[in-house]
Amino acid sequence: MGSISEVLKDDPLHLDSVIPLDFNTLKSVPESHQWALESSNHSVDVMLPVIDLAHPDAPQLVAHAARTWGMFQIVNHGIPLDLIQGVENEARRLFSLPTDEKMKVLRSSENLAGYGVARIAPFYAKCMWHEGFAIHESCVDHAKILWPHDYERFCNTMMEFRKKVKPVADQLLHHLLVSLDISEEAIKIWEASANKVEGTIQLNSYPACPDPSSVIGLAPHTDTLLLTILNQCQISGLQIFRDDVGWISVPPLSGAFVVNVGDILHMLSNGKFPSAYHRVTVSENKHRISFAYFHGPSVDSYVEPLNKLAKPLYRSMSVKEFFVIKAKHNEKALSLVRL
Ligand SMILES: C=C1C[C@]23C[C@@]1(O)CC[C@H]2[C@@]12CCC[C@@](C)(C(=O)O1)[C@H]2[C@@H]3C(=O)O
Ligand SMILES: O=C(O)CCC(=O)C(=O)O
Ligand SMILES: [Fe+2]
Image 1 (cartoon, protein in one colour):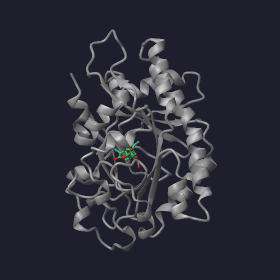
Image 2 (cartoon, rainbow, N blue to C red; image 1 turned 90 degrees about the vertical axis):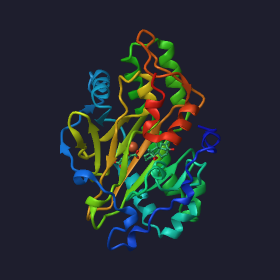
Image 3 (cartoon, rainbow, N blue to C red; image 1 turned 30 degrees about the vertical axis):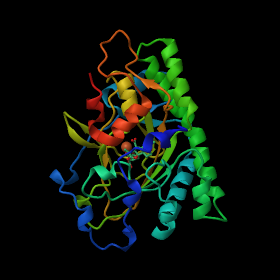
Image 4 (cartoon, rainbow, N blue to C red; image 1 turned 180 degrees about the vertical axis):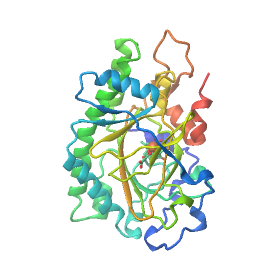
């Protein structure tokens, strides 16, 4: 995504003016973080599909789960447990730094990488109980500022994770595209588009909160790209919304990753794979960490429903155009590009 800064330079959100709170010093929830939540984060427990990627039917199971849920969990993905633990440890090392240290790597408005609030933060009057750190391409510059004499451990761990997770995302995308009954050429184009970019890693931190029912970790949203592969680090908090059931908790499963469909795959599949609407709640006594890999596409790609036999529900547009629409309209973006 070389020219993403170009896309974001007209972004109306001034993220560098929204700074995460110094959560460590708080004994109560400040008004700035108190949300009027209907039914206070209430959710039900329904098991999301858990797919063994080594199972011979994995391609069909993945496609079925993406169609019915837009979100599922994967096991037997080949990402070693010690690497998962390593990423969590490094994320905890980063977020436990003093606020003034983290502020040295604050993400600017037109930049994808660095420390700060979620990109969706400026859409809400209240702040989320969350801080994040995004890694785009290399993380050496930022890590050297944080740990001048010990930056390699952080960077090597993150790069090793990206090296291992990207092929998993490629494989999942392949299963999904094949199931769409589209031309081999279209499959190749989109695989190449996703393959061309390194993908962004997002580390999320949700500190323990004195009154979890009055705050939100991450407000309800859909992810923008093709696929997100997320690890919840063994602490619950992620919820997915279904019209028929309401909010459903996604229990963390040791060693598993949660996969969810993003808006661009939603459009490519003509809505067959719905982008998952999800949110995050926080805990009273646990500092929750999660980390996610956001898979492609290249900003130079052109998005349109790929199955030419079906009536298109979304108009054609460049990925850049969609990023601009999403940055301006957030939740309304998909409905604005619907035909
Ligand atoms: C690649 C990206 C997806 C993301 C925006 C980003 O540039 C890096 C952070 C990602 C994240 C994580 C929290 C939720 C989210 C909606 C946000 O505000 O920042 C996602 C973005 C997204 O999928 O649009
Ligand atoms: O922390 C989580 O479980 C989810 C994070 C998330 O939705 C995101 O990074 O887009
Ligand atoms: Fe998300």
